[in-house]
Image 1 (cartoon, helix red, strand yellow):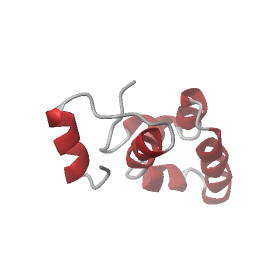
Image 2 (tube, rainbow, N blue to C red):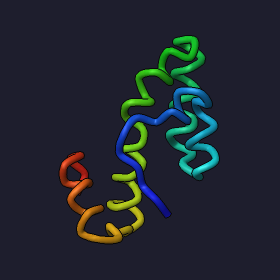
Image 3 (cartoon, one colour):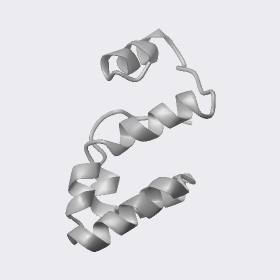
Length: 81
């Protein structure tokens, strides 16, 4: 499974469906609630943060590890690992 750390175009365009399809139900509900109250403005803000949040949860909660040294370095630069 791949983890991403940059801007999430999919969250920008599809909002809470992205975490829902990834099985990240907690963030799907959070995004849905924020989108209802902000009229999809929350997706713009969360598009900058969600990939980092999701990748961090893969590493910390599910025990994933970087595939190689380059990936490990990118995660360090992003402040994840």
